[in-house]
Length: 364
Image 1 (tube, rainbow, N blue to C red):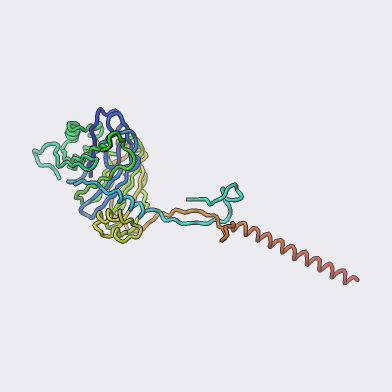
Image 2: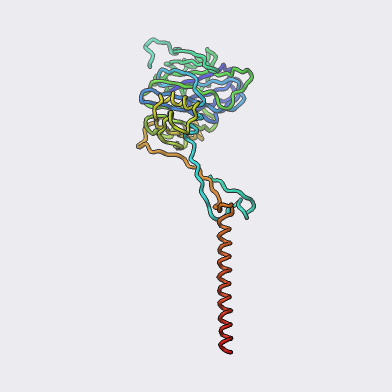
């Protein structure tokens, strides 16, 4: 589906890390790791858009990655505010639950406070073709076609990119399917700054009659991977399979209107409306972990679920049940019971005393 690659790479000595979109490679002896990959997928049945953002760590000053795309793609910078708005729209509902008896941390168990729970090239065409090349902020983007994975690797190397040996092998299925590629070179404008935190998002658009998210190149990752997908479509969407990772989990599903949702922030609302054309869409948020990336066996293909069932996670805060003045109800209950027992005892004692007095009078 996509292709991204970046920066001039010297001799590649450090291990190659991969992200769900493709392979990310640091420069020289540096190291870089992708701790979180978040992507927004918009599909209207004929056109797919992907806005991706990576959270990285390490000591690399430059990095590069490559990603396959199933058709001719356009690439531009994405709006970071898009992710902020989607995070707000999909955040869990907060609810409070009360409990009666005190727990650890409640008085008198030492402490106070509440517990929280919580397109194919023509014959004779070159093996590698350059469709276009743009400079987008810190990104140098090359859009490529290739009929041979080794030729693609050679072109990248000749143009200042260096790929690990195993990546050419992993690219072969995409070459066989006549996919295209986006290679991105990334180097911060501020010299000396290392790549860390959230990188600027990229927005990639291409024609597609199916919703696909490429993951095969993530097999090269050396550490567990985390994937977060926001899917905007006409219906609730779901992956066809786990493709070698843990079972995908839906954290939100529901229809949203980006132009009228009161939970939206005005600044990020525009980014979401631009992506959806201002139309109401069904939003599905999917999270997945890949503890052993080598087991990834394909790309994510998403399909409409059997029903547009809404879903939202609920996070509970457990709170000790108290009266209006903050006194624990269990304590009031015990005090009340003690008073009742004492009163009952007093009544019994008074009754016994009265009967004794009556008995004395009768004998007299």
